[in-house]
Length: 299
Image (tube, rainbow, N blue to C red):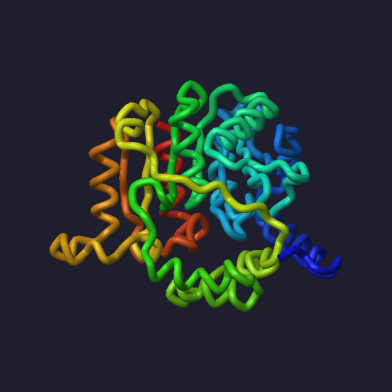
């Protein structure tokens, strides 16, 4: 379902700009050509800083979602926050051509990094963006120095059935009301930034391409990843399969996921952010999250 009128598009653009106003004032935007279309990237931080590429989650998330971390990360890094091609945001896909496989996503992100003049980067992603970032690090290991994953989906565990059922009405017929209801359910009614929430609502019905899906990375591939990895899990996430608790004596699923990642990745730090839900990242608990990220990226 596309945006039906100029008013709807204007509403999205206005909401996007309002969240971007929370970014550092020196922020600029660049457009990078790729085989799949023009990719819109928000940039800030010292020109000589080490490049850090940020990928947002899926659904209605955009590069604007990094607003709570941008200023702190941009103190030491040249920050590149990307609007995913074919997803809500300001990237413009080529008509009839979209990434369909993980290999396509690798070609797309290679082109983005080449266009930014960044042969080697630190890379981070939230949710679906974490899934893309991990697959990219596995396929292009020479280009990723450090990798951080914020509550990534389909990387070390599958989805909770209740999460998918609650998301289904929003996916079948997206409306602002359904987007808000889903986010309020997943975050447990915790107050959300109203500007960010309006942007998620404004993205309902955005003319998006079908996202690339696929299996979790193979264990043998994860064991061969040499990049340093930081895995931060949301302690109150509703995305993870809670049914596994019955067979593990009630061990929190986030601890099981952290243990699985620790057993597979050669160089990984894991931590759990308590009382934070999946969709509240990366803008919830900004100081706590910021300390984790700056400590990892600066070490």
